[in-house]
Length: 301
Image 1 (cartoon, rainbow, N blue to C red):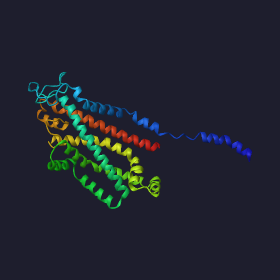
Image 2 (cartoon, rainbow, N blue to C red):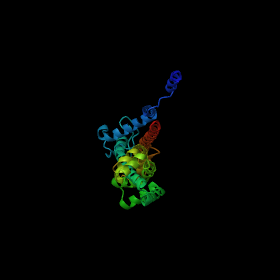
Image 3 (cartoon, helix red, strand yellow):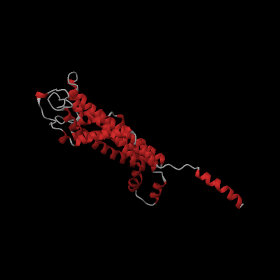
Image 4 (cartoon, one colour):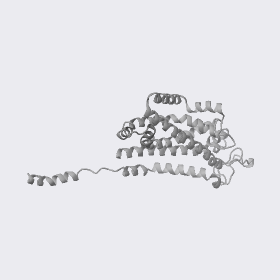
């Protein structure tokens, strides 16, 4: 018997050595962050954010300064994006407009994300009539086009920056609530959540300490993907005159102001439109790669 065990020992060691090693999550994380599209999108977003934050120091022109003698000048070394019908520097207004547009987008996406995430977790955890009421409210919100909803609300409370943030938040919380609720429903039946409940943890503690940390990645991905949507929604409201009010610049108001000069002064609308398009595209690409990276890490784990 001992001789047979000794004879089979090498074959056992060989079979053990032939078992492939389990890959860690680190290589998967490195694979998706090395993608050139992700890095390019981060660079574009960084340029836009830094330009917006440092706009007073990066431009020599007053964004609201009127100079009729320089009206409708084509892009040149003096005015890289040209000037508008009042002689205002389009690049300067685009940079200052980015400050307002990004501020509205970040505030709205943060408020909608936090509110929608909290609603989704509580709806999934408690269920019953709480879940029914919140999801029916989400269905009602989904049935209304965001622009129509914003037009109705702003028509009642009036157009200004604070009201735009409130309207955009109302128009976007349901997306967070639905996605987070679906993930929280699967998490609340896991062993560590059941053990916490058996140990006497309060519902609020279970929701905040055991469910919320496990939806963090989904929350961050939704934040990134929603920034582009909110920038477009804010620009649409400003284009219609329901968002940021003159003389404050925003991308939507600049595109609206320049639409009458498209034939002979295309840069007044096209330049801010290109910056907005690149910003939204970069935010969407970053969100897509974050989502793919989260999936790869989950599979590796």
